Image (cartoon, rainbow, N blue to C red):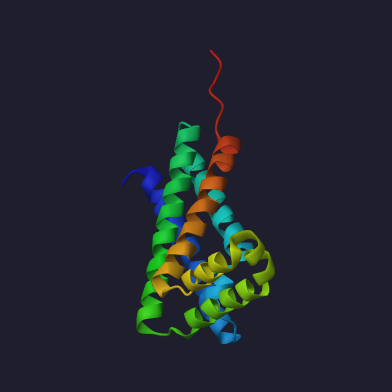
Length: 173
């Protein structure tokens, strides 16, 4: 297997393992795991840390160092693999085990929208606000898609930075 794929897959599985643990620890301490494992304050740094570790591991294993494109490839593949694992787990959990946490997540979103009603009505108008409120009553699939999109965006923002700073400078002739 290609080194880029191998490193990306390995670190995405390790990062997923941490999310998986966090998910069930949240349940044990009676917190909504969908809210806590999808929270940008938690998942953003976790994605960034393991993305950095994946690129660093590739740099150490590759005898020719690290070029920007290689770091970018490792980072994006890591992000995609991690997102697929995370989304698959959420789909399985929602369909076979428990939908209560998704209902609570939906309710939390609706409460936030209703709390910001004045600002939204001012920006969207009354009819626009009602349409926005109606569209926020999402299915589990839509929620999982939204959370997955957030993960991809985080990876897309962090990957170029890490790749740029970790790259090996080419030797001067």
